[in-house]
Image 1 (cartoon, one colour):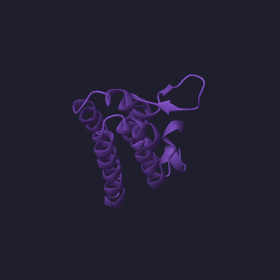
Image 2: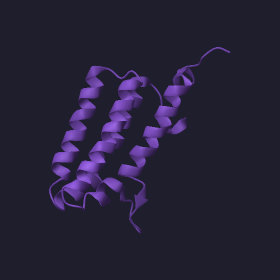
Image 3: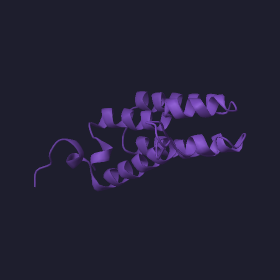
Image 4: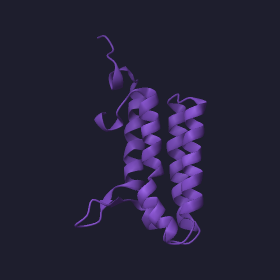
Length: 127
């Protein structure tokens, strides 16, 4: 069978990685919805309420997304942009309350997924 463009051209290992990090990014950034609004948030915002440790724990989970992107063959430029998103999210997210509001709006992990999707030419949600 001939490989088609998009997700069909990815090998099974990378498809599994893409699905896993897509689910993780959604869990961290947009899994939950504030009732009566269109505001979405995730564990990043919730765990960020724990001073110090919460943002560090979610940053480690976000680093896993970057690691998998590297394993999937993302370029150094894309990895660098992903790292900037991570550091910015961690640094500003560490500021009590302001950081939690920032996390709700910035969604660094979803941004990183979009960077990978753009580079790889694949919509991870469609896998």
